[in-house]
Image (cartoon, rainbow, N blue to C red; front, side):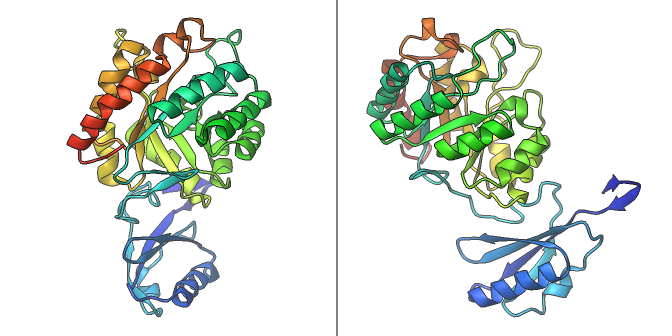
Amino acid sequence: MRRSGGVRLRIVLVLIVMRQDATPEQVKGVIAAIEARDLSAHAIPGAQRTAIGVTGNKGALEPGVFEALPGVLEAIRVSHPYKLVSREVKPDDSIVRIGDVPVGGPRLVLIGGPCAVESREQMLTVARGIRDAGGHILRGGAFKPRTSPYSFQGLGEEGLRILADARTETGLPVVTEAVDMESLDLVERYADAIQIGARNMQNFSLLKRAGRAKKPVLLKRGLSATLEEFLMSAEYVVSQGNYDVILCERGVRTFSDYSRNTLDLTVVPAVKQISHLPILVDPSHGTGRRDKVAPLSRAAVAVGADGVIIEVHHDPDRALSDGPQSIKPETFAAMVADLRKFAEAAGRRL
């Protein structure tokens, strides 16, 4: 329950489960019946049948009003505050495609690249290394939200053009961060996926805009975000119609001063239990130390992550951003070879 202008509003969520033999016309008929009540319909195809989530601010809604409609198997209430991203709504794992790379499912995904795009030569050198090592997706920041206003802030649109060139050169799809509305417009134009960073996890206006984008969204967990807050941020994106959301655990802030952050691997099986969204792990930001990246990547695979996102730089000691946590392309290649064995043991493949 929430308040708005002194009026109490209830967020309604009913899940309508269609029969396995329901026709597209029957699905459309249910959606029309939902919208006729001034509610929103969210059709969610599953492996066996389609489900339709119902959201709105119209107060209590009796699920039974939909059960007599043609093609409907049952209508039930959803109890979680994060509704469209919960397994109550979609019991099957979601698979999100970045370019032609599926994230989720049996295949582990390896994302690599520098923290920041510094030059065309740097980006192409690293991109070739990622490709040759067997990586699947290229990362690199064109817009860099930094703690200090005097630190390197990224190359902006020129950095996005360089990333697009690297994609053309290597065939690797590209994910990069948007930090505000203007940069999200540009990222949507140039990249294959939009990253929402930890500092913007609860920037709800930005999340809504990402929810209207036509590209997948990689959502990183905030520095002090609980699991529920993390999933509610994903709900903001999905509620706007973009169901292609990938979660990413990148470490949280604790009392520990041994590493940059504390990588919370317990969140991975927790997400797998209650949400259908895929989840990646970022051990680079999670530790801030390059010597910890490989062992925690292995641990991420062991606990069920759908992949890892690694910072790779050809000359990390001279990197303009996050050099201490970046590994060289040859180290990334050795790590990929090592992860193949862990993937097989976990019933996955690279």
